[in-house]
Image 1 (cartoon, rainbow, N blue to C red):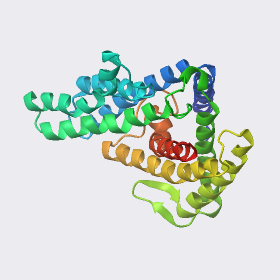
Image 2: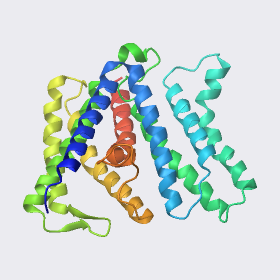
Image 3: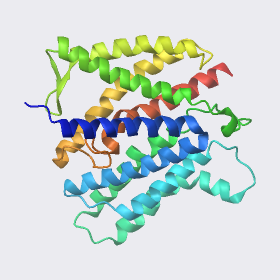
Image 4: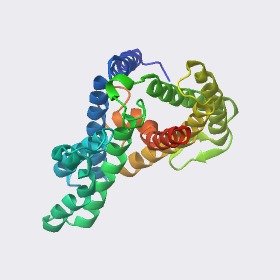
Length: 288
């Protein structure tokens, strides 16, 4: 197959812009970091609903996006201690109302299968919004005396993203050199057990090198995060691949020419973030 220089050029430019925007948004400030992933989460939710429509399901798209915004803000506001401000307290607890808000449209909608529409609408919020809302809390410590803008440690997120890239790279190289046994051929023909295992092992090795940054008080936390990245990042990639196969599309969107959409670029991070968030929170609670 001849090398398409035009395609290569587009992919290269898109990749460079993507990395610059991503790392700049994370590095510049806590506010730019939140803004970046707020946009990413809403765009991902829109892509998810578009995929669902290609599966012949009609989600409550507009209300779903509104509830997605509310969910993100509700989870984000939980990093602040509860106080007597009624507005903040209402926002912190608004997430509990989301399923019931959506059920109102379920009651009155005229779609062929309103229950299916309701389930997929809610699933999109769980899949696209909650992981990124938890991700933006990973770079800060947990506690009532924490000031997020001063406590922000961007390296926690950069490290996780670097581990995802490392795992993907090592898994690809390992699979290319030693791959024989397909992992899940129906969904991802290129993935092999050999490549996946090599990717996880070398990703954990990279996790040990991240200890040089002294991000956490415990020397075991980065390697365990790397293990989580290797396992759950792979599952996240497979889940998104399965959705695209069900929708009969190559890419989840067209936001990044040559690279697809937001779900294509962040499929691993979506699945990794909740597990890393819980792991770090448990580790910090154990050290207090």
